[in-house]
Image 1 (tube, rainbow, N blue to C red):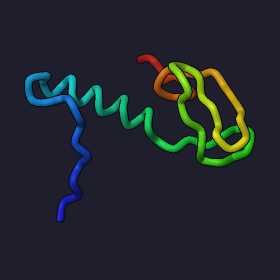
Image 2 (spheres, rainbow, N blue to C red):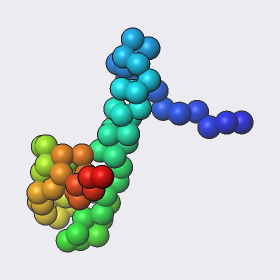
Image 3 (cartoon, rainbow, N blue to C red):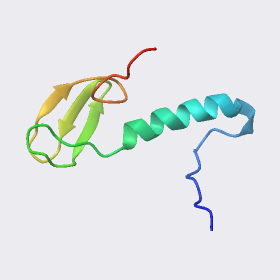
Image 4 (cartoon, one colour):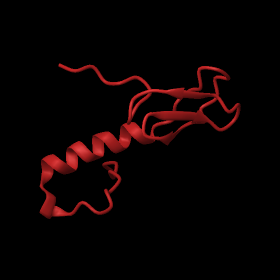
Amino acid sequence: MPQKKEALRGLKAKFGSTVRKRYSRAYRTLKTARECPSCSSLKLKRFASGIWTCSVCGYTVAGGAYDIVPAKTA
């Protein structure tokens, strides 16, 4: 059986496929598990836009809005 993709909430057909694809790429990047540089646990979460905090050791680091390391620009 083909694997079912996770549906995006709030983005129906009226927004168009390009906007839905961009949003889903950013959302998946935002929600992936990240390793803390200090304690190596996978509990690094985004606290605010550009601020990442580990819930285990309390380590805080500044980075990109959707990822710790900003994406390369073409």
